[in-house]
Length: 302
Image (cartoon, rainbow, N blue to C red; front, side):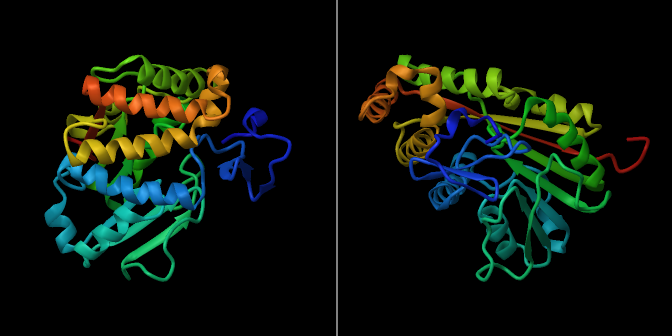
C-alpha cells in the first residue's frame, strides 16, 4: 500500500514500510502499490491459490518450455510471494535454476529445493539480473500490485532479461466484470475497480491487454488462453475458488468500505460476503482468468 494513509488508522503501527490495520499487516510505502496484506494469513492464501490456479488451468504453465526445463535453464518467478510455484517446479525440474523475487521477504529459507533462490526486489526498480539471462520468466496475479503505468516498463524489462528464444508468461484475473454476476459481486468488483483503478492507478482490466503488452515489447509467437473460474458452484474448483475470493476480499475490506461506507458496521461486511456466496452459487457466477505467453525473437530477423 502506498503512503496514502486513508487506510491506516492513527492507532496502527508501522515498521519496515508496513502498517498494521485490524490485526492485518499492509504495505505502507510510496513505491509499493500492492493492496493486499503482507502477513502469514496472506501467505497461506497464496499457497492455496497456487494449487487452485493449477487446478483451474490444468497445469502450471502453457509456455512450450517443458523440454528446456528438463535439460536445464534459468527461470524467474516475478512476484513469487511465498515461493510455492518455484518450489514445486524446482523439485520437478532439478536441472534448472529458479529465482523468485518479491517486494518483501516471505519466502522459504531452510526448506526449499537446492536449485531455488529468492530475492527481495521491487520489479518497478532497476533490474537485479542482467539482460539475456533467463530461459523462462513467469508472473501471475499482480493486477492489484502494479500501477497501470508500470506494466509496459515491467514487460519490457522481462524481454531484455530473456535470452533470445526464451519465453515469458503472464496470468491475470479480470476484476472489472464477471460472468453471470449478481448485484453483490458486482458491487465488490466495482468498488475494487473504483478504488484500485481511479484512486490508486491500478489497471483492473490488465488481463485483457496482456497480448498487446507482449507484442509492444517485441515478443513473437504470442498465444492467449482464457477460462472461466466458477465461484461457489461446479464442484471442488468452485468451492476452492470462492474460499480464495472470500479470504482476499476479507483482506480488502478497508478498501471496499472507503467506496461503500454503508458496509462499515458491526458484522455488515461479513454478512454481505455470506450473501454474496449464496448469490454466486444461485447465479453460477464465474470470474475470467487470462494467461498469455510470448517468445523473445531468436534473431533480429524473427
